[in-house]
Amino acid sequence: MSSDLGNTLLLLARQAIADRLAVSHAHAPVPDLSATPELMQPGAAFVTLTHHGELRGCIGSLEAWRPLTEDVVANACAAAFSDPRFAPLTVEELAGIRVEVSLLTAAQSINFTSEADAIQQLRPGVDGVILEHAQQRGTFLPQVWESLPEARQFLRELKRKAGLPADFWSDQVKLSRYQVQKWREAP
Image (cartoon, rainbow, N blue to C red; front, side, top):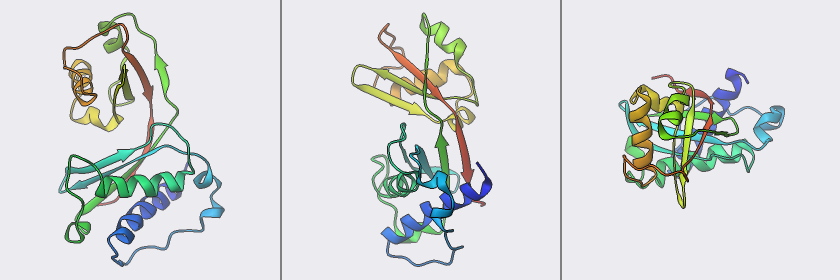
């Protein structure tokens, strides 16, 4: 997939947020979506918003169930206005927001015999990881390795994100991995 695809996804995400805020802004026109078949295929994407280098919203889909364009637009709006960790984005903040779109591969189960074995199989900087236990689930995109480069700490924080204690372990824990192709707006 090309940088043209990435640029289109970034434009779609920013335009969706601007439209929701009823703001017009100068931007490159979004290309003809029908000319890029992968945009109309089911796709799973996360949209991450940062403001001055700090997380400002991040929402996405772990499974491809709707056309990629719809997924990016919906997740851009959700990241801007519905991430429970943040107040809804304001018009005043829009210009200072940097958009990143991550396109996910299908998740693959990780087979392991213990927590130590699971930690050994994690690939820092490469894998996004989904942790599931009973009704609890959490994921970290591969980009999270930049701030949590050590596999044991990465897994501890992922358990917390899933609503579990950091030292929790059970034979019922399920782990899956995926990779992403990502594009980020220039600063």
